[in-house]
Image 1 (cartoon, rainbow, N blue to C red):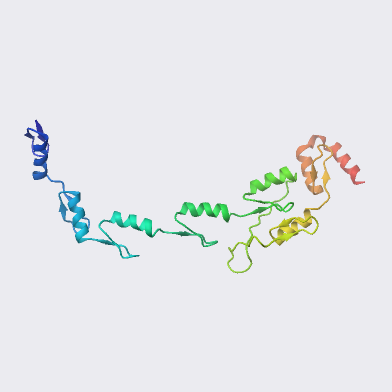
Image 2: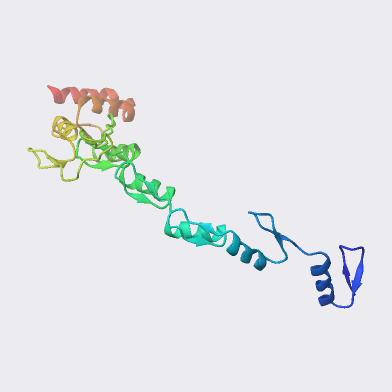
Length: 226
């Protein structure tokens, strides 16, 4: 026996009879969100919407029988674009725009000793410690144009070349710093033979790395100055 739970346990001999009873006595109503009409099936509701409540696209005037269909149309044909304020490129998602900004318009940290650019201060510090044995200050160089928008990035074709070594840098400031520091005489630590571009940097290194042997190192350093 098949029992109807909605009307105090009325029983039927088979499932089909119970289903017919439910449709007749206890129908599930599908309500129209626009005019509150109710329908016994989803198909009937969709037919009603198509006939009475077409959804119009405000951009191209196409009509759709449901909001879902209209939303899908807008996503496909009229996507919302996220524009880069730096270069006016457009992207279909905020995530894509963020990736573009990080890859293309991230601040550039420039090594004034060799002209290489790095995406982060940490990368520049590691480079200078490894390649130049230097722990002095870091300069942040975001290459921007002095004309037009303050965010306009300088064209890659603008180059500044050192007349002494031929190195090409990306800004006049970087070239000036390179000229000031890039060709200085190197000062060698007599304890470990590391080279530094200034006596100040050498002294910082000795105090940090060879503090216990500082007298010997100082004597050797002073003897080299004589």
